[in-house]
Amino acid sequence: MMNARTSDKIATIIFYSIAIFISLLLIALIGFILYHGLRVINWHFLTSPPSAFRAGGGVGPQIFNSFLLLILTMIFTIPLGLGAGIYLSEFSRESRWTRIIRICTETLASLPSIVIGLFGLLFFVTVLKWGFSLLSGALALTVLNLPVMTRISEDALRSVKRELREASLALGATQWQTIVHVVLVAAIPGLVTGIILTAGRVFGEAAALLYTAGITTPRLQFNNWNPLNMNSPLYIFRPAETLAVHIWKVNSEGLAPDARQIADGASAILIIMVLFFNIVSRWFGRWLYGRMTGKHGKA
Amino acid sequence: MANPKLMNKIGRNFTLLCASLLIVTTISIIIFIASKGLSTFIKDGVSIADFLFEKVWRPDAPKSEGGPLVGALPFIAGSVAVSLLALVLCTPFGLGVAIFMSEISPRWGRKVLQPVIELFVGIPSVVYGWIGLSVLVPFIRNHIGGLGFSLLAGSIVLAIMIFPTIASVSTDSLQAMSNDIREASLALGATRWQTIRMVLIPAALPGILTGVVLGLARAFGEALAVQMVIGNAIRMPDSLLKPMHTMTSIITMEMSNTVMGTVWNDALWSIALLLMFISFLFIMLIRIIETRRAVK
Image 1 (cartoon, rainbow over the protein chains, first blue to last red):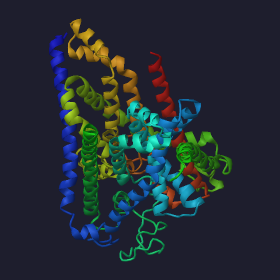
Image 2 (image 1 turned 180 degrees about the horizontal axis):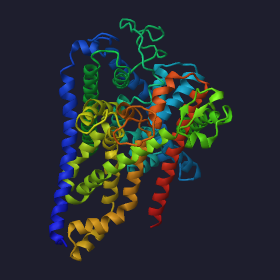
Image 3 (image 1 turned 30 degrees about the vertical axis):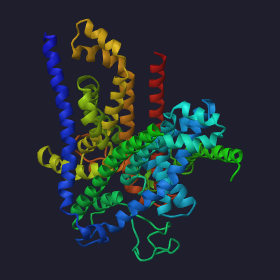
């Protein structure tokens, strides 16, 4: 039988190897994407529309759609998720009712994103007759992110000290005033970090969008900013293919001769955005926290 | 200025509305998907047993040929095969990283591996699919055999995608172990590896299992990354190197090519319903594991 000390050493070496392997794998994945992608990305690629059958198309409208969809989704997700989080953390006691809310949140969070996309197809696209549109896509993504946002908000609010709430209530503030002026303010760093991470998720999502925001983009007139006009980029009832969906589409349809280059470039843009969201959420959360606790110290 | 009492009431009711919306949404999703998914069995008269256990997928087959033939077994078996294989490939690495982070080098774990895991989570699934398609598929075709588009390619891509789930949940559950049991074991003369193997892993097992089930659930529901590399051929998964279909890939491929209300379209909704049902089973499984842990 093997000596216990020797096997301990071997095990330690194996665990180190696994940790190093995983780190190298990540570096290889990101390095591969950036290496191939950055050769494709130039001003033309970032701004011009795709061309269906010829080489040399760009991903301009897709990038625009991704950002617009992100903003729209956040407009719905943040107030609703924050509201539910406030309810769970501030206004309710543990009861059968909150247990039902929690079970639903958990159920919603575990649904595959394609199922949420199909629900969007049925409800927003077909029943409400909004068609494949920015609005349908944004609401599908809201359903996808609502449970995450709720949990983030509840956790961030719960981590605020009880003394702060009690001090505010003792001064005669109502519960709502306490929440708005004291608890929410103290919870901002946690909330911001969570929101930025959610944003990263929205940016890369594709399965929930295939059948809600659609896989096409009409020709957009970028000099027409009237949101009620059908040709305007801001018209929310137009189909809007995002960058992530575009990667899938160029590969599954394979009409463009330079599909490979397009997918490389688009993947690199997505990865850069993910890295950006990740770093910003870390840095911004820490900066806000430092700033706010610093202020508290001075006061 | 607005009356604070009134504002309090409005605020409270707004948050209650938001929380209720979670319930309404969840229930509407269940009702909508179920109403479409069940019409295969109610309106089109397909038996549930045929749907679950038959192998022939020809929903447009005429009555004279015994149609509609709505056998979803190849997709169900495909999803099970690709997810379980992904789990087998991924669990040693996920658990290994968790042990490294909590027992071997917590400092390196926090500084290096924590961000590494978060970035793995952050990479969008289509990007995983694209790397699979442009690197893994040609590699398998040239060095192992077959077309490249295969069960193996799908499993490897999924394994990378579910790795962060298993690693982070297992790390949490190992870190939650009280230091007393570590010290007691070491004081008895056990080495670190013996402590990990015989004390910590058994004690943290429910948490590790939760991570594994969560990973499995994620693998089952993943659509586009798998669809891009698995080859999309309707056949039972009988070889690692042959193309096949999963429940999510068939929905992705065929949903837009079929007209709502036809048997074919209904059958795809039934697969979506089954997918939803399976994800509920996973939640229940996790609840059972967690209550067991709580009882202990």
